[in-house]
Image (tube, rainbow, N blue to C red; front, side, top):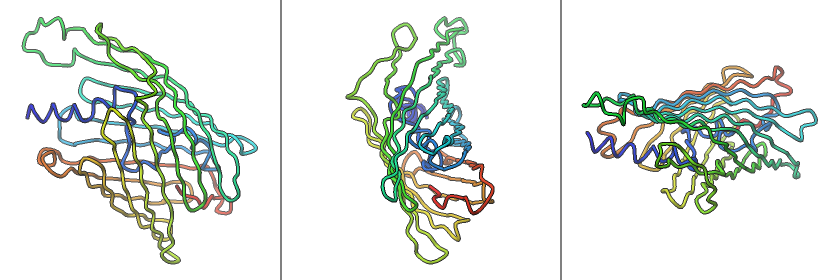
Amino acid sequence: MFRLIILLIILVLPEMLSGQTPILFNQFYFNTLSVNPAFAGSENAMSATINYRNQWTGFDDAPKSSQLALHSPLKGGRTGLGFHAENNSIGIYETTNIMGSYAYRVEVKDATLSLGLGFGVAVYAVNWNNLQSIDRNDQLLTNNSSSAVMPVFNFGTYYYTKKYYIGISIPSLLRYAEDDDGGFKAKNDMAAYSYLVNGGLDIDLSRDIILRPSLSAAFNVKYPTRIYMNSMLGFKEKVWVGLGYRSQNTVIGLFQCQLNYQLRLAYAYDFANGELGKYLNGSHEIGLNYIFRYSRKVMSPRSF
């Protein structure tokens, strides 16, 4: 069990604390604003999204992530503004990001090209005093929590039509590391940037059935490349079911439901194969998206 705990920390902790590798949900397209500021305003109406991920259920101090995103186009449609808040925790480690986004959009024939910049703060915390020590007088664990507030920036491009999209982004332009005093310091290392590429398209199989394959890949020279592949079938654009696969040998079950013209529900369940699968009970994700539009005539047919 001790070896399993060490393995889980090695897999997840660098993603949370490096400030370079983004935390990706299985249904990454459900809240693209969290990793690409160019998505702001692309729904052509004000949009609100909440996501929650409970990873490795049944395992003490397992990773948990929650997200809140708001974005809207401004008058004239050329620009969009967005707000995104995210909290990630594993054991005694916790990060909270609060970001604002600005996007500028240009019409290119039947498509739209958007360029976006994000800016905000990240709060990093290590709660050492939450650990249970054999020695009650251990000074390293007694009232020895550390935290820091750091600036964060990101950049992205987003190209989309009614039938397909592709996005390229750098989710973080700064890197953070814990120093010898237990605090954090920021530095810029262009060679260690993470680059996130995602895309998807709609394929009409019949009048009522749509096939929607999608792909997301995160590249970083210091960490293994992570790939998410999803494929969903949509029935009358109201109910979507599908399967996905993620690096590290993880299988994903996907479900979405358009409850009405404004409200959409998403759920995903994943489980790991191999040695990890023997100890973990899988991970749950749930999300809600509400778009503030009230007439079917003005509802955008693009549903990415």
